[in-house]
Image 1 (cartoon, rainbow, N blue to C red):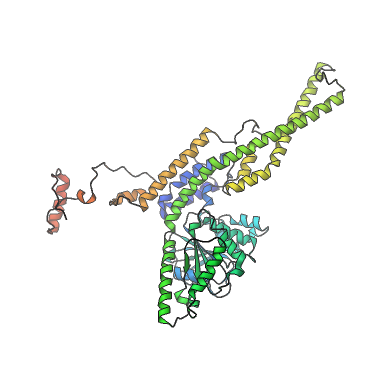
Image 2: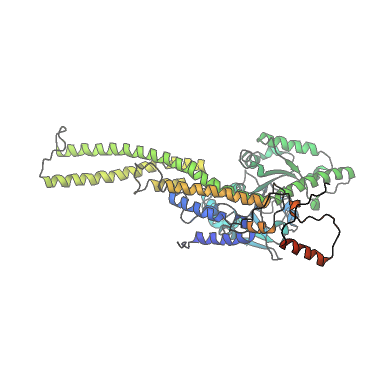
Length: 536
């Protein structure tokens, strides 16, 4: 069957082309997302113009958050090796800046619409969220976002996001919404604090948003808390006091575990005159900076596993959360509809009896000719049927709040409200008891998707791990970089790698021509008896 060309299919085709060159290991996951989209469209959990693949970012994402003047831009400039971001003691930028690699030598600054309209970036259709948070602001996406490019090799294969200085007291609602969106999508979140302001108690709301709301997350391990510009403490040599003050403030917000890094930028540091103090500060800085950079370089591996996990999580949430929630809503909808029908039908019958003056003991004995009687009953049936569909609609509307509450518990990826509206539509009977589009075929399709995610994880493991320690031929690695399954190797005896090479008793070097002849002869000749190797 020829796949229908739609805008979302066109975007997925572009994403496949991108992955074919940038990250072939993830190429097969697009097929899984296409199958998952069919399930979502069928159940009404996903709009026909959307895809679950556009709800995640496919490039490894590192976000840098923090308070005003915490040295975020200076840290980024040092990491990429270019003075791309403006820096200073005051707030110098009030926009979220997405920084990515470019082969062009000159850096470019692009408007926010470049991010809002590209599903490969983490801010695809972010204007809708901005509009929802602040009416009228969605059209001003350029005032919130910008895209910058740089030829820095440190940014190859990853995206870096620099956020404006954070102040929860004065921050706009739309800015807080974008901040939460970034934290959800990021593979690594660097949270910066300014060591020059050892009074963290005055930043209660800011700490609550940056710390308290993150420590209970399932992915809390991706947050690194960094106390920057520690060089300012060298003169008094009171590093321990400053760190302790911040640790107490973060501990009050529930952060009692995890690493707390202390660094400063060597290019913008205050000179430290005491040699012993300088050596101690530089040693601590270099150690912590090395760990931070190491985590930043590992996000590519983490992103690959996160994409596969996202595919499995959505499939599991549909079957274990969305479908049961829809079943509960439909059960309540049926009960309310039947109750409304009983009340309305009884009311209509009473009115009919009162209007015709018939006896309550014989309510259906016709007092008129049969033709009029049939017409009357037909009209009553039409009226009662119309009232039934009205009661259906009213019962469904009465459950809108419950549907939104259930949707919030499931997550923003699944549109439970739209799915409920579809299942309570005109053509869906109240006695079916299951969501529209749900059945054995859909269940098997979800099961197949979840089984395939295990295969994707195994392929990632084959690329990044090698528990046996044996050397893998180049052909094996090449097969992992394509969407086609790798050819099955010829089954051979399980021997150590060193025993599979031709056995040469003496390591005496031979002329080049003789070496070639030996290799050719061993390929053509039958295998020689195994010679016991001397033990070392």
